[in-house]
Image (tube, rainbow, N blue to C red; front, side, top):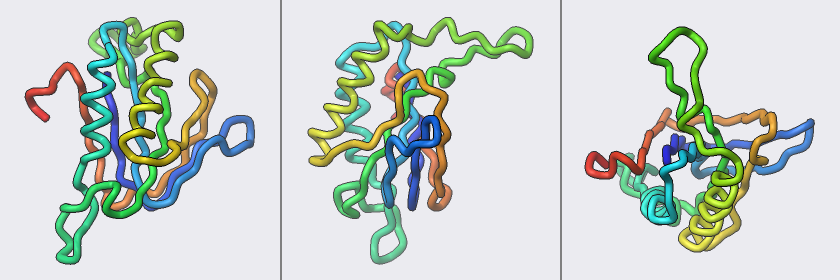
Length: 152
């Protein structure tokens, strides 16, 4: 499971001209799911996201978590995070989980984040053509991969 976590001052997702999710201060999380992912990956990643201390404190240091700043999360599924680009110029997405595996894990990630954050998680629409708008604050962008836990 891969996540691109962006600290934002605002973010939204629009599908067919309708906003499906929007937040003010918080995290835009782009989530990629692969076949090998399990509920253990969800728990590890959800705890990392909820506990990530990248918001500024009174000294301007990144010491505050999402809860400390009353931030929100916009979670968007993004299978392209598993693009393989080794051969040619057309990426392969063979490592990305198919919807029958990915959708239940995506929904479990929403639930896990809601429990940890104590609030509703804004979302995109799985598999839809989404338009994402954001103001990256900092910019602060962090990439996490549950298959690389030792380095995070």
